[in-house]
Structure formats: structure tokens, C-alpha cells
Amino acid sequence: QVRLVESGGGSVQAGGSLRLSCEASGFPFGSYCMGWFRQTPGKEREGVAAIATSDSDDSANFDDSVKGRFTVSKDITKKILYLQMNDLKSEDTAIYYCAADPMGWAVKCPPYPKNLQPSQYNYWGQGIQVTVSS
Image 1: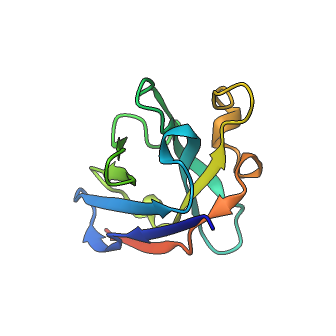
Image 2: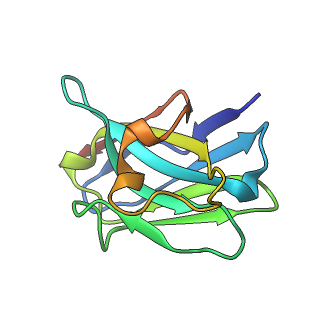
Image 3: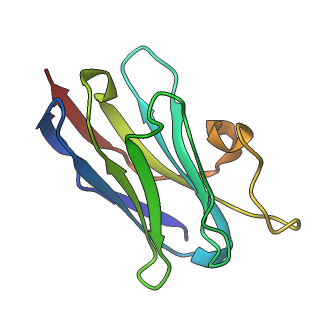
């Protein structure tokens, strides 16, 4: 059973940093596509960052709104996906979700920007609140 559990959220002032973690279990971590998404009330869920979990592929994609401020990384041994968020802005306030989906027969993740679309992922965490005050 696939399980994704986010942690590390909270409140921070604008310009500050937070690191989100997503602990994964129930699937072979090295053969999935994973991503971070966020959602605010009344808006659709949007992709923030996406990365393949394979050991041989560290490439990642980011939404334009977070490029240069957010980074994504993975610890394959611990089965944890991280989202490092720097220079946070009030508009980053949202519930953040971790998502995963198997790579499939092609053994690769969808290309950008498809890998930032929520519809590409079948497994989701419960979400965690990030609040940035100005």
C-alpha cells in the first residue's frame, strides 16, 4: 500500500525558509515519479516541482513561480523526498502535497511540463500547511 506522509510545514516570515519532507512507503522508491504540489482555497492544485526517484536521474523541473527559490532532492536509502523552500513569499502560502506515480513500462517520467500536472499522479499525501506572513 503506497503511503506518503508530509512533514516540515509551518509558519514563517517572508524571506524565510522551510524544508518539507515526504516519507514514502509501500512502493519501490527508485522507480517512481514524484512531485510536490500546492493548493489554496478556491484554486486548482498546481505543480511546484517534479523529480524521478531513480538513482541515475537527478533532473528536476519547477514551476516558473518557484524557480531559483525552491529545490527538490531525494534520499533513496531513507525513501524521503525533500522540498527546500527559500526566500518564501506570501503567495507561497498553501497546503503542500507530495505525490507519486510509477514510471511505467518506459521507465521514465512524463516530460516537463506534463510532470507538473496533478492528473499524472495517482498517489497523494494528506497535505501540510505552509503559511508565509509578510
